Image (tube, rainbow, N blue to C red; front, side):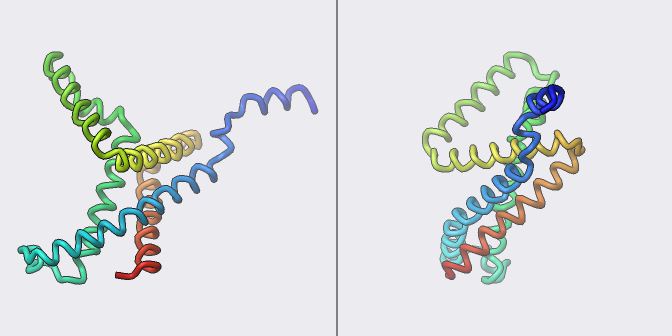
Length: 177
């Protein structure tokens, strides 16, 4: 093996060569989360239907589970996209116009709410951590391929929606209500 070839292979990171691995990990993660959220979503639809609330008058009975699943999908993808690019979140929360005392108060309030969520709902936190980690890994791989940020967000949204929906569909196929 020539000496220059070994130098080139030493500089290649494992992130550069594993786009397919990060993509499949991302797709499987969202599929599994869609599967695990499908059962509570069906339960929420039944509870809302039994409450005889005004929602039943506005929405047909067959569309209620679909609307709940779409809301869960949008919320999950939106939260994971926000958390996978924390710079946007930090600049939005901590603008230059806010003074430092208020920044400190908001930071303490934010982190105490996060810690309460982590300690009280560790199972949901672990799901969120896995989702955000796979989202960051795919985002890094796509950024290394020189995609623009809007292309990355669009791609991630489409793939996440597809995988999440597939998890819902497979759960309803194997465990029909």
